[in-house]
Length: 472
Ligand SMILES: [Zn+2]
Image (cartoon, rainbow, N blue to C red):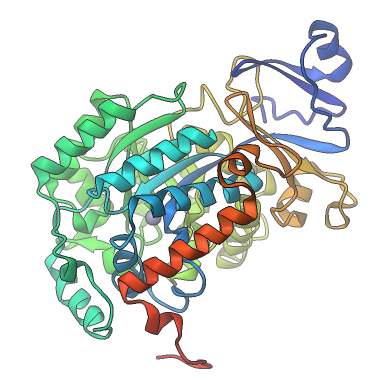
């Protein structure tokens, strides 16, 4: 992945500190770089690390079958929100560590982490510190909910009433945030953590969902993003419930109020029209495509081939660990291309090469870091992964992009390097082993944390639901 899209056979990458200093054939690179540690990647593929352009990391502790067979708002208000507000700061730490372990082993080196209920300050700090500790490159998108669109309010009450045993947001007296204090809280988090950890950690002011954000919140977040050289991540037109607002499309509304720009990363856009695409192109608004989540929650099919043809920058996201329910970019690449092939009855709707670009350099552009990450070039940050090809499912291999996208399961990444630091080698994450004793010990802690969260959130009845061959 470089501007010439070269596949270099018998190649090598030289890294000095945080930076890639040479890329080329091994004999040529070795002549200039004789000393230092060597990682042997013979018979393997070296790729830029994957940019996961949309995720919600610590929701992973709500996995395990709770969220299945639910539509977006039922899942949001009856599983996700009751769960997240029941977290304690140590749960956020365990969730973020579990996320790092899963993400590193699937080749993710950069993540946009959309933090629901960012108002719970201790969860934010605990998560960010964990990313710092384990070496993840993270954009922490601290989300704000400061209103609820009236047309959705009654529907949400109906959904919540179906599960009186759950401890809902209102039961905990957690209020929608006051706009002014939310903005101050985000700015404090930016001042404390933005561009820390050798530049690996960023903090983004992020109005959570178009329908949960006042105009004032949207514009103040955008102003903060401009001032601090950050971006705003936001959920836009994810489903039919939030396709329109005030009688116009969500994209048109966001444009009319002056929100859209090249600092906006719009997640989903699964329910947008041709005019919305023109508006987004005009504003150079970036998109995070989350195909598995959109299919899981039956939200819709984002018109990605049309957006690509219009020249919109699109990154790929795994979305929520609770509505995917995994962090696996290679698997999601295959799902994405298959989805758009069948949706358009066009076998070349998205090529293997393009989806690899979306997971790497286009993702980097989507988060405005294309000058630093997303490809293997001299001068860029050393965010690299090594993929083992010596496996039955990756044999034979002729065309590298085609083999990776259609044959890999996502478990073939052996080594992950972020900012020049080896965070996983031969499948082992030494920082996790050092902190928790072993990966198994972390998994046991994660299960325990999850059990306690489910208990506090009143989600036991959903956990123990009877066998259900059909559902309403
Ligand atoms: Zn999301």
